[in-house]
Image 1: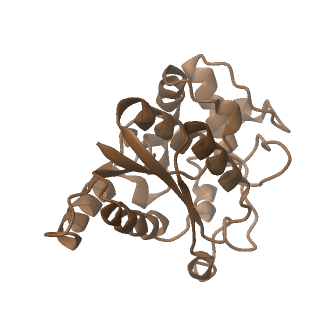
Image 2 (image 1 turned 90 degrees about the horizontal axis):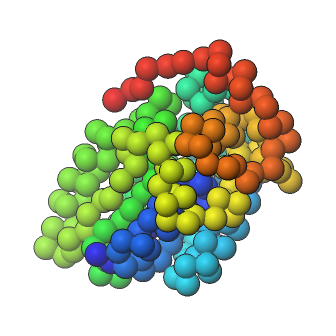
Length: 236
C-alpha cells in the first residue's frame, strides 16, 4: 500500500514511519504546527523524512490552535509532572486535535492517490485522550469512507492502537528506529525533562521493553517514583 504517515517527531510516530517503510510504500510524512508550546518535535519529524528519503509536509494550523485554549500544550498553562494516566494530565488535552489533523491528512492522501493514512495512537493514550481510543479510530475511518465516497478509497492504519508504549519500543527496535532522533518531552528544553507525563512514559517503556534508552534526561530517575505510586485501568 501507498501510505502517508502522520508524524509528530515523537518516539511513537517515528517508530511507525520506520515500520511502514519496512512493510509498505511510504509516500511521505505529514506534521502539524498547531501552535504547540514548542516545535522542537517538528525538527525531528523533518530529520526522519530525510533519513527515510521521503517528502515531508508541515501544515500550519496555528491559527486554529490558538483558539483551542486551556491546554498546557497551546496555552499559558503549566505542564504537569507525573504519571501519564494521572488526572492532572488532562491539562495536556488539545480538544479534537486528532480529528482535525486526520481530516487534513485524509484530504492530502486522497489528492496524492494514497491507499492509507497511518497514525501512531496507542493504548497508553486511552487514559486521557478520547481521540486516541479504538472507538474513535474505527468511527473516523467510517466517516472518511462517506466523505470520500466515489472519489478515493483511503484506509486508516493504527497498528499501535491497542499496544503499549513498551510494545512500540520493541517494534521500533525491530525496525531499527533511531530512538535518539525522536522527541517526546512536552517542555522542549535542551534535554528531555524526565518529569512530564510523556517523559515518564517514555522512560518506563524502554525499561519494560528491555531496550537501552539513548535519551538524555534532566531528571532520569523521577519515573521510578511516578510509576510506582500510580496505576490506572485502561479506558476503552
